[in-house]
Image (tube, rainbow, N blue to C red):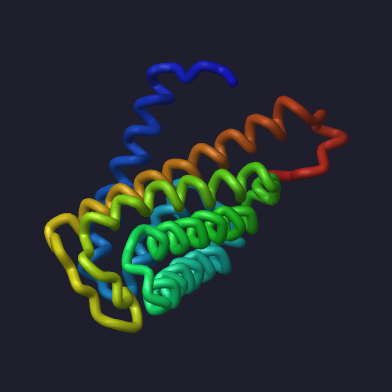
Length: 188
């Protein structure tokens, strides 16, 4: 792994801030909470015609993850697992969505890492709730409503920055690892 230079590190900090602001603001959109995230992904790194399909799929993936959170919470577990399951599903699914535009992300490495980043960063939601009784379909028993925008900001900053970095890394691998005539993966 090559070291990250200062300008590149600043770029990642800027990307994390953009996704964090998007996450903090998305709390107030209700069921449309995932739309700003998907649109920001399209503007930052999904600059292809396939983004027309990818953006709605990203919204669906995040809705499915929220539904999975409801299902796990309804089984009776009011702890960490609903958030970890939802975060892992969303991270995994979002990598697959981005892979529609960047086919080199169709790999076990990127999807597994996406699931792990989503799962771990979803732990930011744990202090917000006493009991999880559904985010999309049910009602929440919120312990700290002021922490909810921060939790969304942390999750979206982590997953969005991971997706951004994955797209950049996959470009580098395709350019440096393949010759122009014999490339299997075309990124443009």
